Length: 366
Image 1 (cartoon, rainbow, N blue to C red):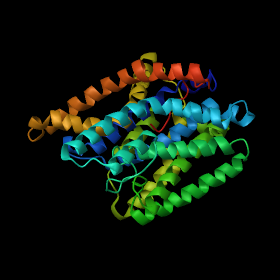
Image 2 (cartoon, rainbow, N blue to C red):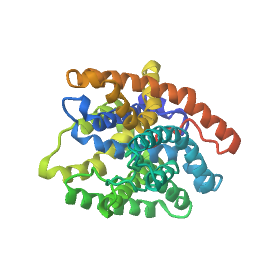
Image 3 (cartoon, rainbow, N blue to C red):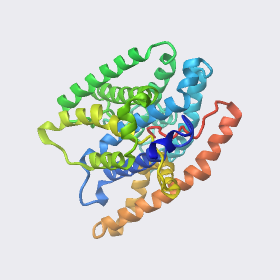
Image 4 (cartoon, helix red, strand yellow):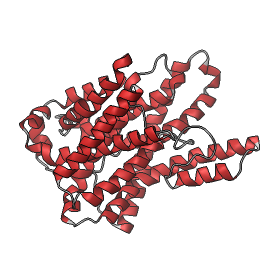
């Protein structure tokens, strides 16, 4: 059965359905942030970030949880593994976004200390905004989720040995309450990327809830009868997640709907994805989507600017065609970057600095 095959190699190997969902979620984020190409925008695509956080916590626990709890893996070494996983492709995208920004500022004769510091802070994955606007990362807005992921990764590594699962679950409950309040106050959970107290609090709560709950579920939910039933239907869970992300808003009820989806529905769907497809070819396609997901996430914003410039002559008459070409090119480019550049670089860094980051580490928010 699907469940038996998924758990024949307990706590090892890739999770193709989770890879596939990450790839589809990254594509929907791309659609959201490049709305000029499409006749309409799927409303709930911002919940893709909450899916990323849940998947990240799940696979981090699967790959490193036992070693962190036993002390075989220190918090410092774990964070080195996380930076090796996230930073090479982040650096490529940051250099792209930063170079474009510097060239634009120099062209206008406006480059100075503020823009320079903004670029430097971005290269170190630190939020700063000295060029105006409301964003934590004005040169590439999606970096906000990577920043909060790193913060919560460090917290997880420090407390997983010292605190009981019950205490960690209590923290998850507090984060869920913060999410519910923020969602009701703002009419939704499209929060976390701006320079204000509410947004920063919501971004930290989204990352804390998703990553810690994902890790807790990976450790404990395998013994539940419900989990075994869910894992028999991974395709249903994948379809449900996509439908949730493309679903329309609910007007005055949208804040409540978001809270219910993030706290109650998305975790159930993620549990069902811990399974293997019966067809190996399907598994390879799902993993190819997963390979593209992180490069897609960090590159789609600066790449979209280039696509709009290159397709400017067609944007007024055939924007959808330009958008389709952009998506296809980005998919091919991102799979290439992951397989031929990012993965080899990470292997070399792991060989040099150690850490044992395995191929199970496939669910980062990026």
